[in-house]
Amino acid sequence: MPKETDVEISRRAFLKTAGTSLAAVALAAETARQVSAITPPAAPETKPIPLPPTSAATERTHDPAPTPLAPSKRLGVAVVGLGNLALAQVIPAFGETKYCKLTALVSGTPDKAREVAAQHGIPARSIYSYETYDTIKNNPNVDIIYIILPNSMHAEYTIRGAQAGKHILCEKPMATSSAECQQMIDACRKANRKLMIAYRIQYEPNNRYMRQLVQSQQYGPVKVIEAVNGQNQGDPDQWRQKKALAGGGSLPDVGLYCLNTTRFLTGEEPTEVIATTYSTPGDPRFTQVEETVLWQMRFPSGIQSNNTTSYGFHEDRRYRVHAATGWFGLDPAFSYHGLQPELSYATGKIEHRERPTLGDKNQFALEIDHMALCVLQNQTPYTPGEEGLQDQRIMEAIYQSAKTGKPVKLPAITTRDTFRGTPPVEES
Ligand code: NAD
Image (tube, rainbow, N blue to C red; front, top):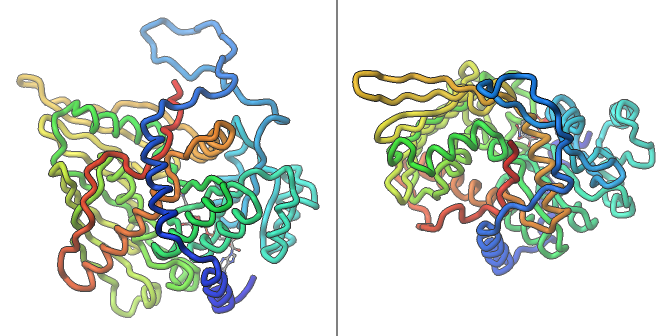
């Protein structure tokens, strides 16, 4: 693995030559806005094989049998970076994808790559190092590249991947600065390739149900959203604790879920943020990046949000939406499994408390399949690069507010879902 300083130097040199065009970014945002009005595409081969019901009509319905494309028709995906997320979540999720399959690996550790390739039937010719990555352009079995590297490497590997003629699915946070995000959008646009940021929550049914409650005003207008995402971080030497590799601390890693999900639930963009940061003095984990960030956001409709993220407390990942005639939320909200809706409202003398069950879906399979469908049907992904850039801009405003101790205003955006593309197919 290259030393951190080497990575940073090569990344800077690379990005310097990649160039940025603000006009292209604005055009891409406009395209994303236009397609957001388009009806979701029909999934190919959508007819599930009919099965006789086994329960009474009053029982909860279950998903129909899945409708996968034949393996020969599925798009090929290369995974770049074989760390925790790739090996424990993303690669296993290909067992549940319907429109794509794992066809190549990119890793700096040849032994590990060979072992993973053997587990998944990937031929040796489809294993790449970071040095040979660009030759992936000659591999016709790779349509999409999924980047799962430390945050500061996302921009370089996105740009090189697009230049190799592949569509890009990139992990969150999109990059470590809004300038890098713009370069990534530009590069994909120039190469006429799609760019999606892996915001799995926006494809997940429990969170989509919460968005429906917000948008339909089922419990009246929303007033306040409270969101928390934090965890107690370990090894001080890991890349997440290094500013050059992570870009920041708890905010871009886990606090981003509070930010992105609040924007997703409301469909609105904040016009103002106010924030504070705190790191326990002497804690070796927080010499370069922050431990805790508390911030508030104001939205054009009058909704306000209160957000907490930390690397210093026991895992907690939840939100609650306070509306005029009820509250609702998820606890947990941002975990991979076991998301639990909660809601409360009153009828006459009765105060209702409900914990409805929607059940689990593989969030990574949903997200990767959305990307594959967008490529197959030439649609803009629901969470394109513009969505990641907007989060990055807001995070920069949050840090600025914490630094100056003053609220930071953001450009007023009054349209809804301004940065989102084609909505995902709603599955029963
Ligand atoms: P990880 O540390 O487990 O894996 C990172 C991989 O990058 C490793 O295989 C490592 O060898 C490789 N790497 C290459 N160059 C490196 C360098 N210079 N320093 C350190 N590692 C280097 O991290 P992870 O948890 O898999 O996270 C990877 C990305 O995925 C991050 O951007 C993270 O934010 C994102 N992520 C997203 C989710 C989600 O739910 N969507 C969850 C976890 C992580």
